[in-house]
Amino acid sequence: MKSLRTLALLPLAAAAAQAYTIELQLGKNHPDGFAEGSVVGLNIAGQIGHNVSLGLNLTDKKLDDVDNWNNNAPLLSDNNAATEPGVVKVRNASLDLSYELNPRGAIHPFIGAGIGYAWLSNTEGVTTSKSVMSASVFGGIRFELSRDVDIAFNVRNNQLIGVKNFDGTTKQTLKNWESTVGLRFKF
Image (cartoon, rainbow, N blue to C red; front, top):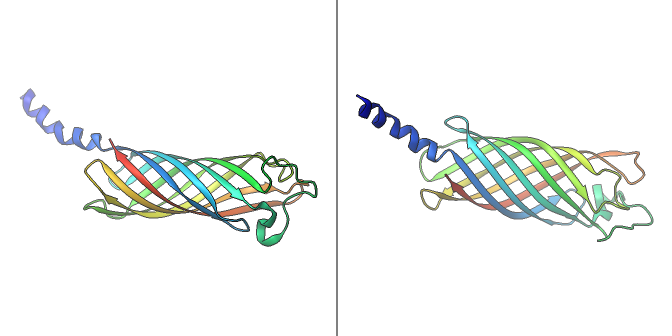
């Protein structure tokens, strides 16, 4: 009887073997009022249900041309002393919940939402905010390349909430669209 119980657990072990993923992402971001910048990301996730996964999404992005923040309303002070003028770097950590719309087959559309925290650097002469809350919604589609590797195309609307102007008086929400392509490894 012990051998039958062991055989009954094999499908569960196979499912658990595919329960964790790591995705490497590269792409572009399109923040409101800024020039297009770059995005590099890493997503580590685990399945918590048949179609649902919970993950940690880490991204590093550059926001170029900050002189044009929010449709030409200057965020910069008159004496911009930033080390790389017109560029703010943002590191974002987000807890993401995603739902796979079609878990069977080789094509997997998905949607999701996340909440997190963002750290801003190179802000001297640009903003008084060093860190802010972030919220996002996202969607995309994954294609299976093999049993263990997918290619994913993602679109994410990420918002940095409560970013202060240089004088510290006005808080704004920076809306940012990101489009990335990623390789997703399943374990």
